Length: 488
Image 1 (spheres, rainbow, N blue to C red):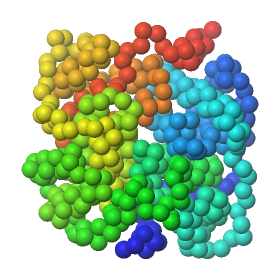
Image 2: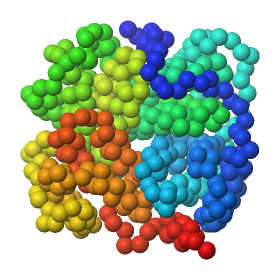
Image 3: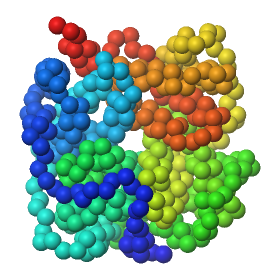
């Protein structure tokens, strides 16, 4: 099956989005908020938000406005990352917000609005870019529009892809559009996984916000998929970041029809983990296909991919290995919400390629103690005091000890939701960058989708490698919001 055959055959039936997209104008409330976010000086945003909150501002309207302001004012160039996180972190920011008390629920989005103003200023200083207007062309068929978009994406033609998504969105339902975008989000190993993250973020936002806000979000996402960094046009060159995709596309026909009916096997999991520390990103997909042919379940394979991503971050607690976790979560998100089997298979194979790439980037070798062999350590205290003890270790830089104590706490009946709630609290009060939100919510989301309780305990505990430490004082924006939100 070649790329074009795969893309045109792919049809998603499992997405929750069902309404036509359209490019209708936003409602008046959201439009006014977009103008406020775009035009107000950065230092006045907290004051203006609190003023509106006291007038019954709807959180959903502010999220919609922030998403629109970000995609209209911040482009995914020259890198899919850096300033573009003002767009890509919104799924995580929203996920955090849904679990907060009423007293704290405005803090993450206020922090995100402040970050947007920072990135808006960076964009203005660079070249003053703003998303240009583009009207849909004469209506045709959805099939023709889909074909035009896939051709433009295959040729890495940014302008043609922008025109094509405008047309396609006028004719198609979101589930059809994302069956295409999920596969291209997994296409290449550039931008350390941000393209897959961008697509999952866009799908999530559209699901939450509805069709009125979709046009600019899709245009921004398609632009991100066309960013090849400083490389020449990948359509006419056989470049290393594109080779795993091309090889994995050819491997799809080797996967048995009953590939989802497999088993979990400790020996097979160990074999895959060892391979991910040894083989190249080009060959990682081959190892996964071989395991599927042996009857190993995709869930068992995903478990190893997440385990290895967690181990890489325990090996080196930095921004690059952090993306092994967030990229795996984004690809697993696509695997979950899209029922099209080739897209699911490609997400699985490409995730293995990404993990092998991250291992190479950080120079990791198989640790003597893997996640499955992590030894629990009993906290000296109990209950909620034990959680505070764990985070005291985080604050002191004893992150491995914090992970072991977290595992000891959870394995002896500790409340995982209490641990997650405390982690979110420290995140909200001490976030210093978008990766803090992206990482934490990626861990919580991946944790929630596996039923094995022992695995969940280990995986959540490994998050101590990057979870935020307690703040001596909230960050400036959060501190100001808390002060302004006090009752008069």
